[in-house]
Image (cartoon, rainbow, N blue to C red):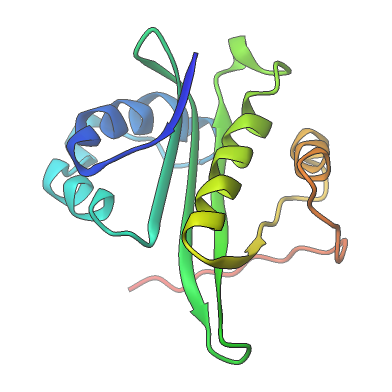
Length: 149
């Protein structure tokens, strides 16, 4: 198994991961027509976008996405860990933890001071993974809102 951060040339690998793994964490169906390869190249070229995959024989079995941004009120960079998913056949093998550790390694290289992640109250597996990898629980409420344009 290989766990690594994707580079701009890995856009087809990211497209494959989106088709197979993102539906595990999203209520939205993903079709090949909705994946814009030019856009994937663009985001993979952005140093503030982190896409980490776990691969088994070049097949994506785990996916993590995170985004770096400045916290201007404290003058530090932080990361929002947006999504993490592992194929059902490979769960409970520590792959989520290993992808988070890879993200943390990049945080050290990129001078990031803080990772923020949230999950639903009933997602015990995610909570255990975050705690196992050193996250500290700061609250037990989660309300989600979206703005659509």
